[in-house]
Amino acid sequence: MLGMVTFSRKHDGHFKLWLTVQNLLYGVHFFLMGNPAAVVSMGLSVARNLLSLRTRALWVALLLLVANLLLGFFVVKSAWNVLPLLAVAIATLSMFRLDGLRLRYGMLLATLLWLANNILTGSIGGTVMECVVAIVSCVTIFRLRRDAHAVSL
Image 1: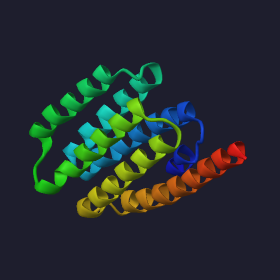
Image 2 (image 1 turned 180 degrees about the vertical axis):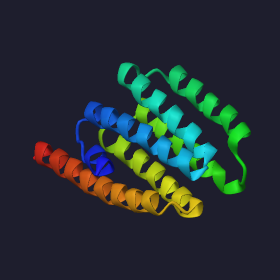
Image 3 (image 1 turned 180 degrees about the horizontal axis):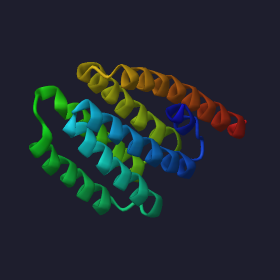
Image 4 (image 1 turned 30 degrees about the horizontal axis):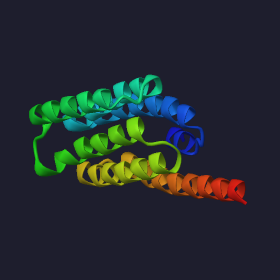
């Protein structure tokens, strides 16, 4: 439910706040599933979301990307463990440098990477959630495109 609420937000600020709450809960889930790469990624995601509400500075995004890469060296246990790290990297660049539709496209790509991670982790709940998030993201993208088209008329 939280994923549906989060990814249905059309206002970027509201989206980022709801995503912070979702990432906190998702981090607990991955801790319980024994996926340390995903737990670290969720921690970085919480920091990213909160920082992106205050600044769009590229240096802050790059700092988070470096932290993501460094932490990845310590928590990656198998090749597919890079998926959450890649998802966080894409989401980080999206949250700091994009807005509106382009932000949603970047987050959809990150969602698809999380979906693959959840399938490989064996997280049934996470897989279902990311499927729902991907669908809601597509609907929100459609709504934002429709709104932009209506304004241009």
